[in-house]
Length: 96
Image (cartoon, rainbow, N blue to C red):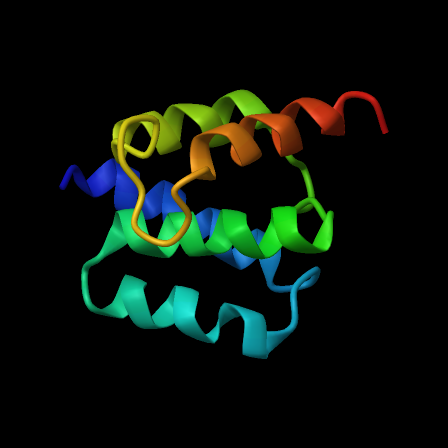
């Protein structure tokens, strides 16, 4: 795992703490602490698209780039429709 990707993920989680409940972030942090960065990121995005919320200073292209870097455009762990839902959620932000 490239250290830069880990640092970006940590920053995104930090930006999300003011929007999501700590209980919602508990499993995201669990996977981060165990070095399962793609699972941590997928969990973070799932928390957002299931609550129809967005992190502060949301940049869809940055999030999409990170998702692709983690291979979530090809395979996900928690939601088999992750990529489709992620894109719908991300694109919808520009219409809010």
